[in-house]
Image (cartoon, rainbow, N blue to C red; front, side, top):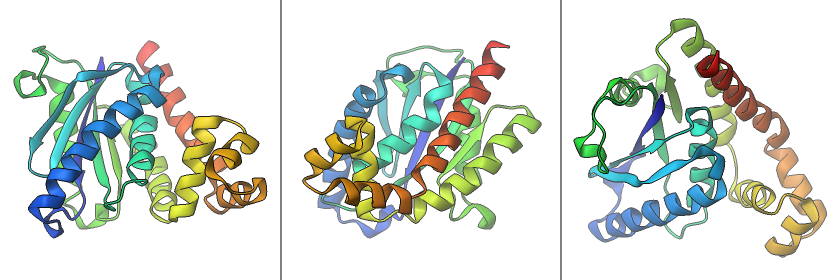
Length: 217
């Protein structure tokens, strides 16, 4: 099984053609950066495709890391000059037709990822950032209930929160994060606390472990 991640740029129509060209460049370079940041996900670098004007797609070979990957991906993009973000439909299942380009691939994982993207059109999901589709109702309900709260927390992060979180992820210790961000240890600590980062990361780990148990059980 693999995870197909289909992403939709939020409010894409507000950007000019020039901005869209820059956004396309940013999502590609940031994808490669995220592959390096989360090597455990074993993301397929060759699979990255911009499939429509406001959508892009890629494969994660270790599907239990797909949610962590998209959160970290959004954090990397938050450092860009153009402020934008994306929503993700994560479909976990088999891929029947393999190819280097997702345009030519097919299988249940793609269908489930598309189902997730389509569900963002529902009024109840307008503020959501991530929808996971594994295909078993109980598991999907459990994972997406967690994602609802995770999305709420993530949507409230300030630019300082995001910078401190990303620095902590990259450099592991608060002292190293503070050094690279050129701020005080206390500032990093305060920003992480304000973002409820420890609780949020527990959610990432729970989703990862739940999927890992399900996929290997």
